Length: 293
Image 1 (cartoon, rainbow, N blue to C red):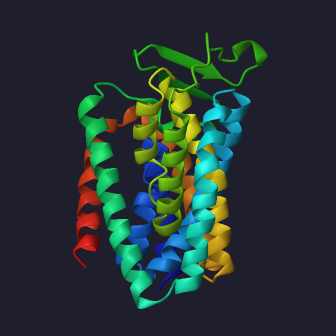
Image 2 (cartoon, rainbow, N blue to C red; image 1 turned 180 degrees about the vertical axis):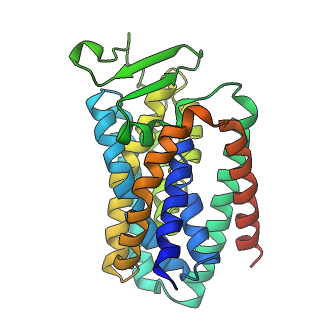
C-alpha cells in the first residue's frame, strides 16, 4: 500500500477532528479496516496510540486554561483504567489475532460506531448553534477559542496573559451518583480498549447527563483529558501483545498534524450541523457493515 494513502488518511481524520472534535477513533479505525486493509486488532491498537498523541496537546492547553475538572477525570479513570487492564489481559489470554477475537472486535466496533452515530445525530438535531465540541483541536493549534455555554453565552478565551484567564463562578463537578460515573468509566474503558471508539461523542453525551450543572466546555475538557491516560494505557497494552504498527502510527500522525491545524482554522467557516449529519451517516454505514459482517 502506498505510504501516501496512510498520510492522507491521517490528514482527513485530523481535519474532521479539527472541525468537530470527534471522529478520531470513530473514523480512523473503520478507514484502516475497510479502505486500507489493516487487520482489526492492528487498527485498534495503532489508533489508540494515535488518539493518545493527538489528545495530549489539547489536554495540556485545556489544563493551562483551568478548564479541566480533575475530580471528574479521576473518577472516570478509577473505573476506566482497571477495566482497560482487564480487557488487555483477556485479549492476551484469548489471542488478539484469533478468529473469534477478530469477530468480537468487529461486532463490538460496529455497535460502538452506531452508538456514536446516534449521539452525533442527536447533537446535530438538538443544537441550533455551534457548540465547543472542537475545543481540543483548537486549543492545540490556535491562540484564541470561542466557546458557548449551555445557555449559549459566548465566552472568549485568549492566551494573551493571566488577566484573560477564564474564571467560573463555581465548580459544580460534584455528583449525587459518583458510582454511576465509575460504572461509566468501566464501560468506556473496556469499549475503548477493545474498539478504540467510545471516548468521544458518547462520552460527552453521557457526561452531560451525569453532570448537568457542569458547563459544556468543561464537560468536553473532562472527556478529552480522561481519554489521554485511557488510550495511552490501552495503546501500550496493545503494543505489548503486538497489536501496534509503529510505522503506520508515524504515517498517520504525520498527516494528522496539518489536518488538525486546517480543521481548527476552518471551524468558524463550516456549518457544524452539516458535518455532524454527514459523520452520522458515514458511521451508520460503517457500523452496520461491521455488525452484519
